[in-house]
Structures are given as C-alpha cells and as structure tokens.
Image (cartoon, rainbow, N blue to C red; front, side, top):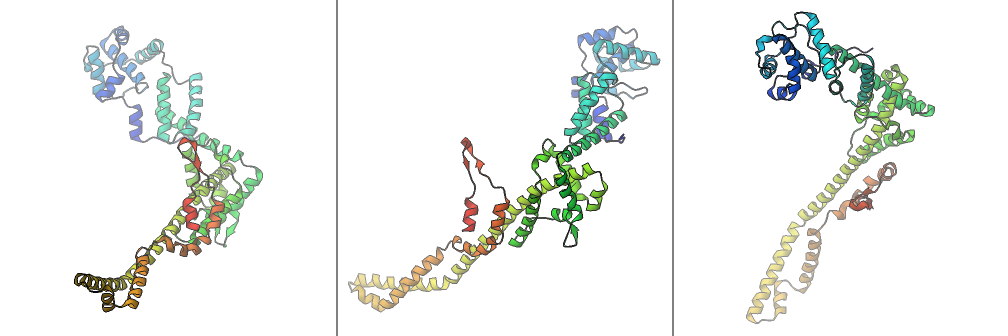
Length: 424
C-alpha cells in the first residue's frame, strides 16, 4: 500500500482549515432560520455555539472538529453574532466527550451527514479510482475527493487517510494505464520494442537511445538523419490507437520517463511498464521527429532564399558603376538633343556629336541589360538550391503523412503550393 505525504502544508490548509475571510464566512457559515432553531434547542450557551460551529465545520471544510483544536476567532465571532452571543461563550464546550459525540449523532440525524465507513466509503473509493486516471496532480485528486465528500455529505476522514487513499488511487491508476497500453500490443510488437534496447547503433548507443537523440537541423544532412529515425519508427508498425483513451498528461509523463531512462533502467522495470513507456515514446517521437523534419525543411528553404537574395544584391551592387556611366551618357545625349531642338538644328547631327549612332546602340543595349539586373527577383536564383532539396525532399514527401486540410464550408484543399514551388 502506497503511504506518502502528497500535499504541502499550504495545500492542506486550503482544503481543511476553517475559513477566515469575510467572503468565505458569508458563503459557508451563514445560518438559515431552521439552523438557528435547531441550535437553540441546546440548553447551555456554550453547547449552542459549539453545536453551530460543528454544523458549519461539516459544511466547510467538511470535517469533524478535533479535540483541542484552535478555532479561528473570526469564525467564532461570525457564528456567535448570528446567535446573539459572544465568542467567549464557547469556553467550556465539550468538556465531556459525550457532549461532542451526542452533537455528532444529532447533526447526522438532522442533516443527513454520514461517516466515511461502509458502503459509502467503498463507493467513494471506486469513484476515486476513476478520478485518479484523469487527475493531473496529487493536489487535484485530493481536492476532487474533498469536493465529492462535501457533495455527498460524507464527513471527511483524517488528512493522512485522504493522502493514503489518493496515493493508492494514483499508483493503481498508473498501473492500469500501463497494463491497458501493454495489452494492446501483440507478441511480435513487444519483441520489436524490446529489441530497441538490445540493438546498438554504431557500437555506441542502443537503438532506443539513438531514436531519442534528435533535434531540428539546418541542412540536408540533418534532414536525412531525422528521416532515418522517422522511417525506422514508421517501420515498427506501431499504431497510435495503442494510446486511445490515455489522458494526455499521462502520455506526457510516460514520455518524460522514457527520455530519462537508459536501456538498462528500462530492462529492470516490469514488462507492462516498460512496454507502455516505449510505446508512448515511439508514437510521440514519431510525431516530434516529423515536426522536426518540417522545421528543418523550413530552415533550408529560408537559407536558399537568403542565398538567392544575396546573389541579386551582389549583381545590383556590381552594376551600379555601369548604371551611373550609362545614365551620364544618356543625360549628355538628352541635353544635346534639347539644345539642337531649341536651335532648330538637325537632331541627327546632335546625336553624331554627342556619342554617335554606334555608341548609342551600345548604350541602349547596356540600358536594357541594366534594367533586367535592377529588376532581378530572387526567385530566379532559387533553382540553384535544387541540389539541397533533391538530397532529402523525395524521402520527406514519402515519409510525411500530408493530407488536405478542411476550410470553411467543408471544402478540402491540399497545401502543396509552397512545397511544389520549392522543388521546381
């Protein structure tokens, strides 16, 4: 039986301490008219105030008051004010243990509260087992249990009992999840998973450790290394259905364990736990590596674009001198033509004097070439990066499960435009 402290002191205080804030007191400790009538049936003032205080403690946080417990002054004053009493009148309450026990019996009879025993306790334990599968933390499970006890008017057991119940439920839920995943694997699949621990890669690390050693790359060699791992995982034939019904946070936890364990560590744990961890890792890593392949491809595309743009910038920079010379020549020719026009002289003579017809033909040809250079588009140079893509892109397109996405109206349209542009 698992027995450990699962709550911090602050978490315990949040769940089990009596309220002291004004808002909480108004919400939980406001007495109704029939409550006050039941309270006034007690003979002594300290018993009336003590009876009301225990009633409020049943309602929130939902537990018994313990012998010798220090009651917050604010809570006593708030309850006493509703009864027209003073907080000091609580002194001497339940000096006799019988008084406390009698009040407990009466409160249960009047309001329907029940102890955490018998069938009610068994039902709550079954409920707790189910909740443990979806609870994200120890504190969350304990909080849900306390809330359910309040809802069912079950008086909370001791804090240590609640912690033990929650710890047991969490451990049992983890084991059930592991068994559930392992039971979905046939014998050949289990054998392939176990082989990941015994097979070495390059005589350095096990296949399992090799598979988890991946990160986003920046070139075609990195892309191919990622694709090696992706294709290997795809070759295992492990369907994602093996994780159906397993909450995401438990998948994340099993994956983290797999990324922390080495092969020897995995061999030392139980079979169901080992297979569950390795199944989660294989499925999760396959998706993560596919994402890494796409991001690596994006980086290669970005580098190709930057290289193409740099080529354009170099060409433009190299053409600046020729552009200036050409503009000066055309400026001189234009001035000569305007002067001849103003004087009524023949324009042909102006052309001959300024540069000559043969040089003019050269200027026009140079201007046309410079126009093309200055208007150059990096897309014209992207094709020079083709050698990068051809080293991995065919493998990438075969390995990735690319499907059309659904747009508004239910129409499906594949997102292949960018990929097609990059490969042509």
